[in-house]
Image (cartoon, rainbow, N blue to C red; front, top):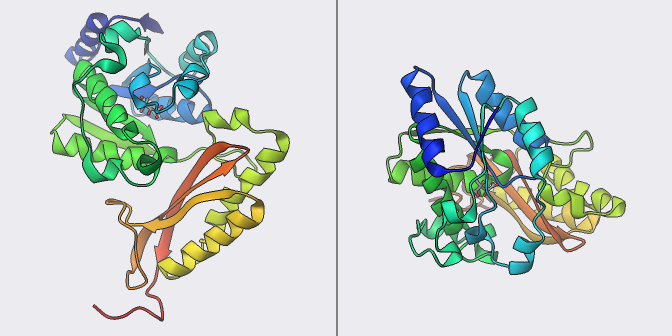
Length: 287
Ligand code: PAF
């Protein structure tokens, strides 16, 4: 595995991979790599791509200075994991390389409404910060496949929108959530939970399981919220949305939906999501 720090070397390496007839698979991360990230690298390697993994803790997507300061940084362990998981090129750019003006860098990709709901409602500017950095990663990397986890479902949908709207020569590949045997979705934030907190957090995957049988959007919402509350989770939202637009579904809707869950456990914000099947509710008015 090669390790690269400069934008110029990274651009040249991706160009030479394409020139040799290979496709580039980009796995963007902020480090603190876990099995969820590994699954993205392995998916890219299995597809035969030259796997370029980036590690950059992007200050422009943090709303809170303390969160940024305490974000886990484990470069040696990350490099070992990346190498073991099929990464060919590990890119670790400095803040100066990525954002010469730091957080004051004015050029921004603005996503509009998709960046302002759910996680975006609680973290103003977060998704524009994500979009701005991912746009830059894609511009430097050039045509590629972009591997993102479904764990951050809103981020995945927002990046699909950006790639489509700005006509990046990029195929977005969404990879399934990796879970512990207990059902807990892997997240860098899980390390902040006590043993008791991890038990409470299982309410998220149980809530998704409670939405396994098709029902109206309202019924599914109510079931999931009840399970989360019973587990002791401070519920931020338990929604059922259109999987592409993230617009909440109502009782007149039928078909594929996506359950989006968020809640606080021991002050740690945890997310989960999964596909659901929505059927028309008895109380739906026809339209
Ligand atoms: O999901 C993440 O880790 C980050 O939001 C990403 C996509 C690497 C952009 O900084």
